[in-house]
Length: 290
Image (cartoon, rainbow, N blue to C red; front, top):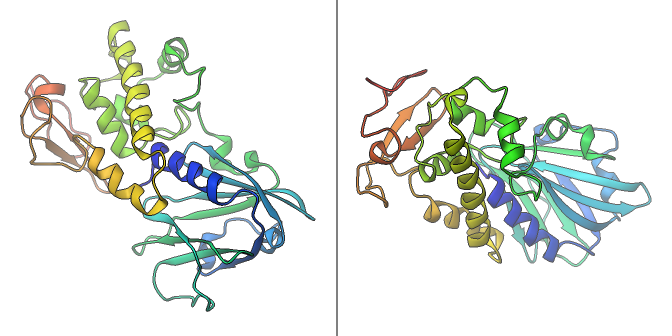
């Protein structure tokens, strides 16, 4: 799943390649991808892209034209991706053939495809006058890379929390943009069990976790800076230290990275770095073995 660093890198890429260009056609291929109908998707045709922003894991492509300012909001979900093509294929896309969900064609002949692998279709596109009209955007918590996301703000966010820290980090209404992969990475850097209760964090642990959030995400964004959209997935995978590396050696201590599996996801961690050498029970709602 694309998370804050990859979406931020896509934002930078689109800001360079898309802003100032005119949209010729907006072609939905999978009808399920469209989550709004008013204004219609065709309202962006003939409009000029004026900016590209990010809200958590949402891309926000802003256009200006006869319909006024519009925002094309894209959430790539678990298996979605954006593929830039210069030039775009000349023929019209064929519905039901492959992973293509939506195509944006520019008057200059280039543009991008939104694709989604697998059978579970969660990729979402909204066309709205105001990003806050999208419920997923309206409920977002603060951006962890914002200047005002300091230790005091983070401490205040956690003050009322009573749950495991892994789940808190992934809650988009608490902090925007962190998903399964980077929460594993952050907790490894912070040397913290994913099942540690938020209410048990000391001041020192809270400070260490805040620092881990800022450094882990900032470094991931920096690694992705300047990369073409097609290379971002490989960069993300190569930069991960524990997530997706079950059975490999921890790059910090050399212990074997372990996994806890759930019904629809899994987490990875290092016992030596994070749980005092004790393994976590690999079952749903598991707790630290004692």
